[in-house]
Image (cartoon, rainbow, N blue to C red; front, side):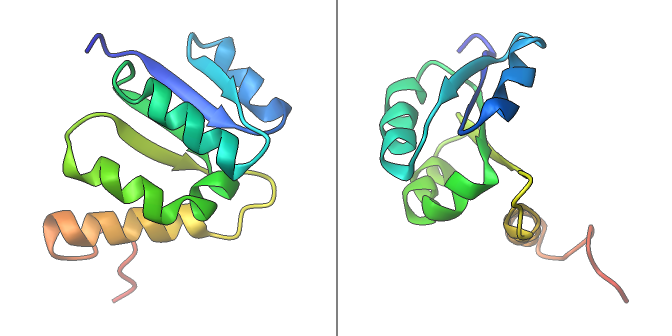
Length: 105
């Protein structure tokens, strides 16, 4: 792996990432996103995925938890409903055994 990064998502918001050197892959729906992820998973170390698509692909994305790479990171969109934060919270609790980021106690 060369440390390459990509973003998969819908809308023009992903084009901003192109300016930072991240490869962009437009996906207008869940089916297209799944197809792209299968194709690029071995080539990219970090894959950003817009939250709207990540929410629809929850079960599919579990396969990436079994390997160190690629790391698939959900990023918020304008229509974000907090899904990305919940995924991060769950991952942190699984990895560390405690909620160090969101604990209100």
